[in-house]
Length: 309
Length: 255
Image 1 (tube, rainbow over the protein chains, first blue to last red):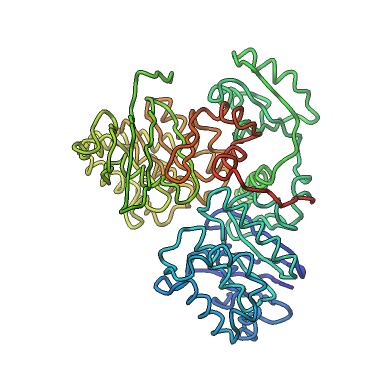
Image 2: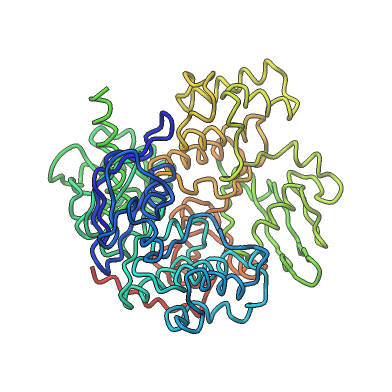
């Protein structure tokens, strides 16, 4: 449904995206996961025909983003990262404006947005600028959907949104996917990756990997351990000074550790921590999260860059 | 740093803030102790920013008894501002000034001597291993470096309390962890840290966490005790149970 081939874009000296290749299948919920400055927005702006790439090409549903830009604009629904509705129009006016621009009416496609729009309908006379963050997000999604697009492009819809609202938003996306829409969504929150069918991890304008969330977790190269003890500050410092520790990253309640040896026995690690005076020590083997994998791939990327330099 | 309950840095009793008939903060009560990392969580619109602005001396409460670093939020806002540091994701440093110019500017505003600024700048830059960036424009630094630098600038004048408003939003996972290393170090040296975040794993790094819901504080305790009380596996579950008790999780991750 979306085909991206060797796409590159520079802003002056800065390479925003470097030879990106990516394919999104019909009706897929595809996540583009990466921090600020990774190139996510540049990619979205090219796909939505708002920006022209320096080289490479991209097609949506077989239509080229440069040659067929007018047709693509009818085909897609786009929710940019920054709230971009008319603040001085009401909720209802915004929605009917977007419907009119695309030559349709709210009534005609109400079914598609009903679940989402119902939550803000009680405030339909309120100016969009006076809505709370969560309500703005729902209105923006309604406006992006009102012309019944085949493909939905969402640039960081959940940034700065609290954990509960983020989950509600993902529930809405799942429902839209069930209605046959192909969805490309970007996010800096690694934990949202598991909610996608497939994800691309992106950093510094390059794709680190593309796979199912499960496939990415399985690709983690080393045994991974979750370690805990009563004094976390001490635990982290001790782990970092441990000769056999390869990586030490705090992960919420635990510290995730990989070792320099293969198939390691964790007893030496435990005895080391005990000898340093740690108490209530827990060590358990765990499966890598997307965030573990992202950090491993980031480090590999940096190492490759250093060798090239 | 051993946190002692007698060293109260922020004292809040019955804080109420109204905007017209809307109650943004509804009788908040809490204390923050010296050297503590205090996590301030809540859903969007729960009233976190309102409370934080009051504690920073930028807005007056409608009623309540509140002191920050021992100073009264009604009458001594200038003294409060001198004794706190502030950093947010949105505004941090001047892009068209160099690293050292930013430090001189902020140090100057806080009334530090030239000599003192030089000393502190050297100390903080060496800790970040960023001495070589002294004369580099902020605009040309990667985002992660900027955020770490912004934190150092916020504690340049050795404030008693530093307020961090979503300091790690959008930052890559490695930098996010390095940022928390800086927070830990600052707290270890006795700076009190008051931090908001939407990353629930970061809530686990706090000594104590509050969760605001509709202008009230509905939960306040250590992450461990909160998880116990709400029978939750992690802080994300605690947050959902507190912020939205009626929330039904219907996404199934069958992959």
